[in-house]
Amino acid sequence: MQNWKRSFYAIFAAEILALIGFNASIPIIPFFIQDLGVSDPARLNIWVGACATAPAICMFVFAPLWGQLADSHGKRPMLLRAMIGGAVVIALMGAVNRPWQLLVLRGLQGALSGTVAAATVFVATISPRERLGYTLGMLQTGIYVGVSVGPAFGGLLADLFGYRVTFLATAVFLLAAAAIVMRFVREESVRSRPAGSFLKSVIPDFSPLARSPGLIVLVLVSGGLQIATSTVAPILPLFIQSISPQATKVATMTGLILGGSAIAAALSSAGLGRASYRIGYERLLAFCLSGAVLVFLPQAFVRNPIQLLVLRVIGGAMIGGSEPSINAMIAMRADRNRQGMIFGLNASMNSAGAAIGPMIGAISSAGLGYASAFYAGTVVLIASAIGAFTVKKIVPSAPEMGSRGAA
Image (cartoon, rainbow, N blue to C red; front, side, top):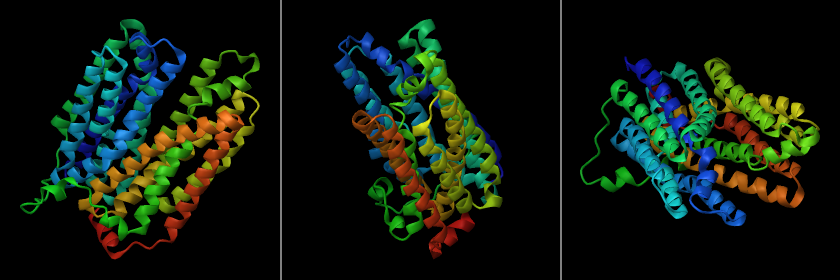
């Protein structure tokens, strides 16, 4: 595709805007629910937890369907659907008057959005094989940038103009992202489906996975990685507080640790993604996941926030380097005409991991202490690393080898 670079950079810019918008509302959800009249701490925790879980559950259900539609009717329409649908739903959140209305819209957000999966499959389709690691790594860097900047931007907007304005600003960011895609992104014509195959174009077809053990392992590794990295999410601020001398400046240190690991992941995604084709995707994935295991477990034994910061930054770099390799390997092993469905399934597994991981961390830490969340995450990381070494030994089938040339 002659215009693949223009389309890629347009998607890169649009995805940063979209994720800044999506993540701008995350820090204000608990306070917005309070504004809606929920003052009891127990009820507030229930509503906050439900609103945090609903998008992941709905995305888990709908992501494979959108991926199938991307294969049948085009990846550009699915990317626009995710951005415009997200803009409409989040704008409506700024007008709700009851917590249940917010919960319903959060569920719709998960069902209708999914820009990361849509952008990933589009970039994987248009990129030349030798540039696959670079483009997916750069896209992952843009994702980290959006995820990192969004909450700070949303918090600032909420303090200056109020919570409802923040939701409207989010919608504007998403519409701007959609405008970039409409103006600068082009897609080759999608192969037509035979007459009478509407259901086939909508219902996900998982048969390619049955013929590809390598793809199954990669999807499981991706989901396991999401579970492992999110196990400590609910308890990390409290853990930092517990190891901080006299519990001073805990908020600042928490922000520094979260921001430092995100920056390390972003830089690693770009740098290692660029070199991944030369190093080898399988080799790089095994190295990064092994490194992640080695720095994840010691976090349970740190005695001050600086030690935790160092380990989290190294771990962020390892995780950031592994994700482009997983996506590149999925793209190269999946039939080009089925990539949307496979990446949709991968997004579904990641959504499940995003819901399961925090529950594991919260339950284990409640019963056994904060350190147990790191133990649980390490066990899942070890399983993912074993999966990465297993993928190296799985020889791609004939259909997979054919799809490599197409990619």
